Image (cartoon, rainbow, N blue to C red; front, side, top):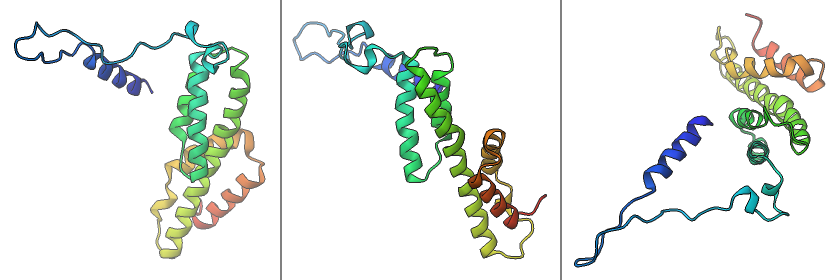
Length: 175
């Protein structure tokens, strides 16, 4: 996230102050701004979300939309979760509390459950293609292990988590 913001800042800084070529016989070129001035938080309309939300809440809300879209598409969203949770880390506003709770559900259960389910499916497919191969490289999945570390402290007794762990154990015996 910091790299992305830093990169965007460098691009903006590089674009500001560019000089335009003046037509022949015209006066010396002048610097022209490349972006329009933006309204500050204080200038934002009172009914807009930006008027009452901190930057962290706004960023987390935007990331949550991306996370939910990734989940709907069946793709991983771990980086987006890290960005959203990081944006809210220091936020103590009332606006951030329900968002933190929703992120806890989505990033603490839905996203890691999708990751372990996907890794298990990949291992099952690999085992079906190579029934006698030992060791099966898909059984050494960092995605599975990391997602399980997120799930187990709070959701070890969850039926879905237990079912996917059982499927994994059938395909990938204990090491």
